[in-house]
Length: 360
Image (cartoon, rainbow, N blue to C red; front, side, top):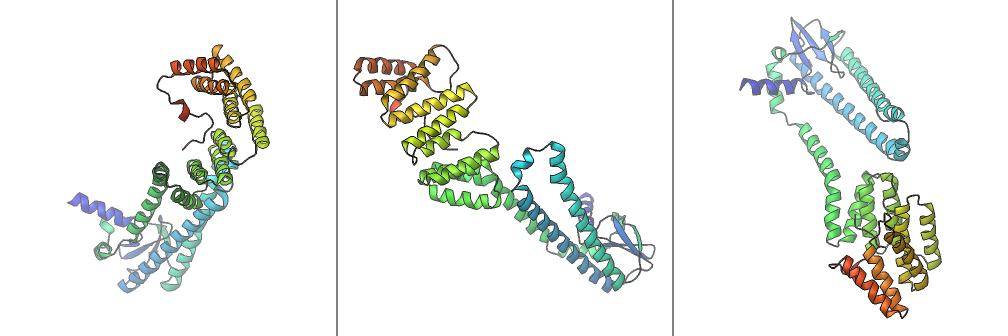
């Protein structure tokens, strides 16, 4: 029991409710900067200690509020707007901007609030000697401790709020995933929008909202969100999804230009051939059979040579069989379909696509 009691007293000593101790006929008050104390030549009367305690807690509330406001302003006015720029900077510069400068600002806030508190003590009680505040369990005023045990803990509400914010940050992407699986696209879009209002740099949630908007046929907004997902993930992971969405609202000339730009700008040969497969599937949908067949022949030529590919060769064979069948080459269509079936006996080719928008 003594261990538990001592633990609770240690918690009390580090709380805003413990702000003085008496030693050798002197009262030492605690400063806002916790290590600083103010020693008076007498033991202060209880009525003055009660009033000082109220003011001390009030000053701590003001301090915590200022710190919270500063952090929020720094996050929303500096970190979020310039997040991508920070990530491109040298590590030392990022450390200075994201840690040292905010810490200096916070320390200045502590000094200013502490100065205001010192001025209050000098005016309300009188002259003091500045000393180091060095409490221990033996110096705890029992009446003060008993009052502390009866006082409602505002800190518990704060911890509950912090926990709620944390679980909201962690769990919202999981909830969005369940909503997308259930086809609740409107609700998912609204929830993602609310989340991104507070955390506007999360690439996963941008991609989830993009997919929801795609299903809601808000195609341009979906493209914008996929682009933001790329931006904040510092990747081109969603480029193929962007192409898939654009096929729903761009005309053929614009879409073919998009494919050419994507192919020409891609440095990775394997990825480039995948984009070519997407383009071929788009041409097939547009009934541009000859252009699509030329691309499929090129892709299958690379596959037969043993080159590394990222597109499913069996699907390419299946699509080529569709083109040959539409062109009157029944024998060629049958041969290609046989190859595709041999490569993937369990595949339902009619449901398979290369050019598609993925659910994140």
